[in-house]
Length: 245
Image (cartoon, rainbow, N blue to C red):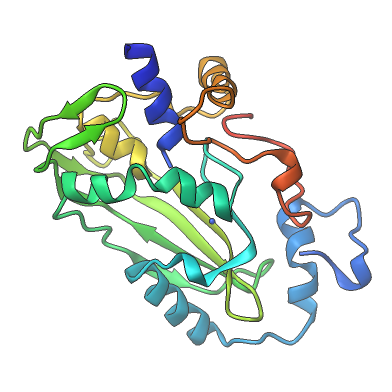
């Protein structure tokens, strides 16, 4: 039972090609993705991109996701649109009830990326309280303890298409583990689970974590940690899945 609990939590923890389609082999993944947009005239100003991102962060909406949307965190993803929706379904609303006062405290929004001009970066410093019961589908109800969630500073990003759709989103990249957090240095949903007493290994390259993610692919009802290779859009060229290092 404990093994299944860890497996489900892990799986739940859970966002461009160049001109004429030619991507020089020496370009990194992010450089290759942005080669087209960095040369072409931008559809949005920096100010517009920042405001679009602020609106999206304050009011998340899957309808703004592009058909080729990809979500990525340090050990979760790449997840395509349909898989991320399926992964979030069982836990998103429940986590809101468990942490009703959760505040991301987003700040530092900027569209100054010289390599990916349509990418907006920002930081969060989450704060909240474990005040509501969390209905875990494997172990049952986890009663609230009143424990405080003090998350570490975390970098996130949102990349937009020229049509105003979100093509890529990233979360969970902790920038400083030594600020007095209560999540054992974990970001995103891993930090929330830690505060609820569910300590999950979230280290990239962990053999145990990679095995659990692989095993989850064969268990019905367990949300995906990453999408099938054949479902991932062609623009996403990095071959690593989940916690692969």
